[in-house]
Image (cartoon, rainbow, N blue to C red):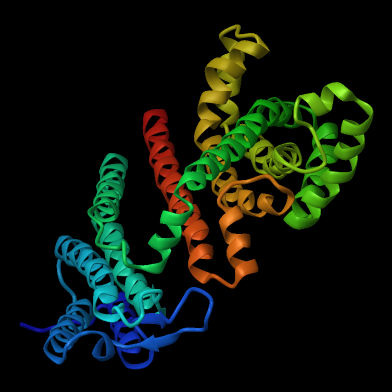
Length: 383
């Protein structure tokens, strides 16, 4: 049997070797605010335990390096991710002693590089298997259930990020709800306004020549600058219109964040409608006219359904974009996961930053996978 090298696997093997040879696995700090010290596997576990973990990682690198069936690679990658999560959860028990009761243990670069390598192994296997939309969503659901089980098991309770969560547990879910409100509200508003505007732009070239360049300019404004621009007019509005202040429209808070996210969302939604309508074959439109359909009937029954996959792609872009941009809204009192990110930056507490960044990334990945699956299903029904 001739062994063949897998190109993606070669990169994964290099990443595993790099993490083992050059990067610490965890960071140990005597307390929350002092600078930490990077520790490798040999510094954390007993010699026998460390050798066993290194042997497994070397075996994982060899497995990734050589070509094998995609299903095996998916299974091995998933097992390696679970094992890595368990191993990092065991580190605090070996490092936090009665002599250092306030010590903090955080995943370091070695852990994150290994996580990225094993995630690449899983992603490459999924791509090779060409899983359908239902299978991908089921795999995502299984991943979320496994993550929830891991967090609920208490195996990560000794890690610093979970200690930060324990301190901020009450506000964490409030900020999570606020983050979702900002994202869902801005995207819904953009769809309500952007779809009719996109239809008008598709039908009226003169309007398209003006509207799309203006929305393009809005898209180029940095998010912090956009939030700042919202503060002055909304502050003046709240000062001179009591009803606006009573409704919560002020220079800081949810209102400027929501409006800024809405403005960022308009271009992708509007442009996706224009592109979706433009790609409809002329013969289809002519057939609809020949059947005696009115303009409204053609839009509802023919054109919009055919353009729907492209429109959904635009909504997906907006959704993932706004999940990230909503983090910056915390700078103007908009709330969301960015609250923890900027509190962590101000306190030099990297684990508090991670408490806000990690769920934001997870939320964006989940939204992307689900919308990709929905778009693929819609495309399949239209063909």
